[in-house]
Image (cartoon, rainbow, N blue to C red):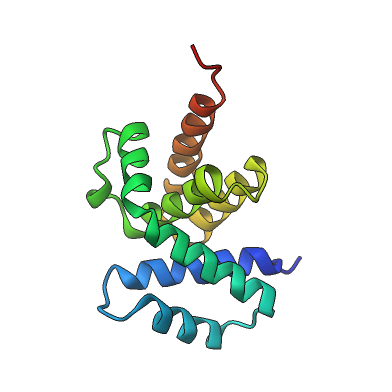
Length: 140
């Protein structure tokens, strides 16, 4: 089954965020180049752009959340793909809130399976599961 347009937008987002870790190019130039390679509809391209900019604008709070829920793994020492997969998923869960939680987790695990190490899907799933469990607790 071919990947849907929103999954492809997340792939483009992840690739852009990954490249930003190593290149001094602007996010827009990297995104534009990546979109030229991938075939995305206008809506999917706009979604990818929204995700890239949303993650970058909220990077510190996303990293703080990663640190809180994966304290044994310093954010700057995580594999770049794992770090950016978590940032992307946490942005969708905590900030944009436009996608159902189950879809966000499934997408993040799939991205980890596609681009991460063998242990990445389990790690990503565990961190996101902890975040969701914590956010769903009733306030005291």
